[in-house]
Length: 188
Image (cartoon, rainbow, N blue to C red; front, side, top):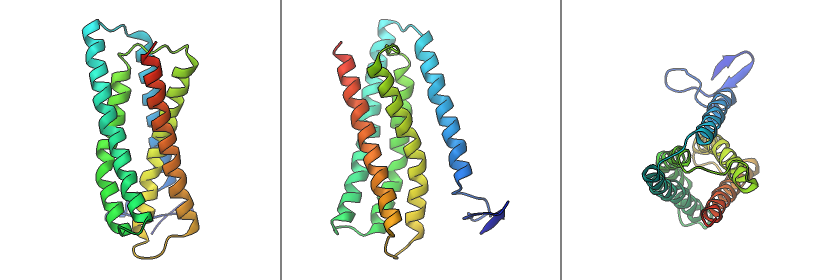
């Protein structure tokens, strides 16, 4: 363990902290800044019809990639909870899905910049809030995954089980909520 200012951090192979809340907080600030920049761009860009159509295609493709990854990851967790898969296998599968999930989320945010969202709409603002919560939840989920892997074959504590369940519920509420709002906004 690395000692820094009285705080203890698990260390990687080079003695570098890889699971501190300081690092997670830095990622959260960067992600919030990126989402803020995307909203600013969306407010200041007028897309041509061709760019808008391309943006819709990228948006739907990114939704399939990101949300599909989340649903697949959750299916592994549910298989573990049902006793049909061991925890190590479930965590390994979920770890492999982090990249497509993050790429999907990045694609959604990027393509959303050219879809000319109505930023004055309460529904759009709610969707943006859900995307922010989803992003922050994803950042802390990485830390949760590392904590779970570190347990090895030890039974999970009630704290870790609660943390995992809360992470899954927040993820599902945000993904489904943002998807539903996007669908409703597209009907207008």
